[in-house]
Length: 179
Image (cartoon, rainbow, N blue to C red; front, side):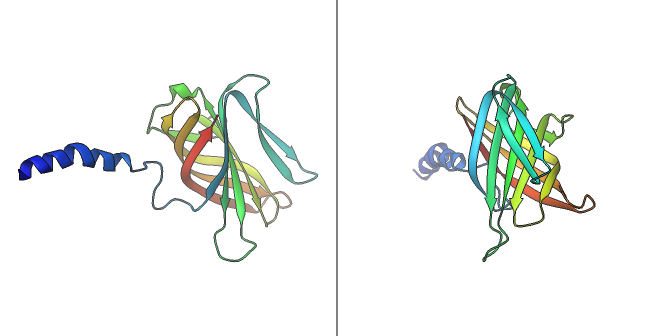
């Protein structure tokens, strides 16, 4: 009788408990909240800089074809009080998402990386322009209307007014891109 109960537990409840685990989230994740996400099947990432306003815009252009692209925004509030809040926007050019395999770390970076990536930061700090994104993207699931994965990356920026001053931001989080 005892063996039958143990077998039933192992064959029914234990797999359900394992399914409840989220492989894209970890205890050491950065504490951002993903506030927006977009995935387009036939698009390109456009990066526009306007030095007059010290502004960089990331957008998805669907008018000229392309592959699978995603745009996600994360909002951070590291400490109690005001003035230290910031937002990171990450753009990924996934190429053909159908060709990505699950749980494989794909390199993020410039146009030479498997997944070209771009980022901007919005903060109460000196205006920053993007330099590069370095890290990895892991695909967890790809459905008809959603891509779920994990981003482990460092985002590099330079001050608009002083090219010798740099800033880095870490992004270690789950990413959900929605069509």
